[in-house]
Image 1 (tube, rainbow, N blue to C red):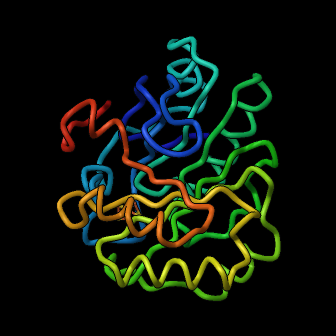
Image 2 (cartoon, rainbow, N blue to C red):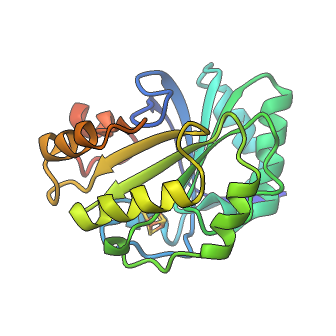
Length: 216
Ligand code: SF4
């Protein structure tokens, strides 16, 4: 089986509850959405078709037990991505999946930590209410939700939706500012005032390296 790969690299986990840990990132090519503030547009097309065995060998070469499958949108290559995750679990890896919240995640192995984006209106992505109602019926203890907000309206919309999907106190919830649109201190103030179990996520890879850097 083959995967279309944008890049595979070893770096520091910049978001999620695994923040700060060394991690191998497997970035798959292709995405079905076009968020206006997308910072990985280079992953939309191109990349290299790699055999599953070569992808696994490249991952193993970094000698790191934490692996994140990301994109683009990895679920655009659903069958191959789920097979890769299953094999990584079999090999004893801790596996994270970063996904954009527009796919059924039924084939994702139970052991995988699913980090699901909730896309507020300023992303210009159409929200799939039915799909999110489906997620809400079957949250896993290890699930995490990431909300990237560009304005106060986005913040309020996400809070409303997270209540609707019974996500508070059920899964870990992260809020990140869109770089250049919301100041981190402004988002920090909103989170403190909300008195809800929300974590501020500053994408530390963008703090350590340039916000536009690739492969870090
Ligand atoms: S889902 Fe992710 S990769 Fe796709 S357009 Fe949005 S931010 Fe970019």
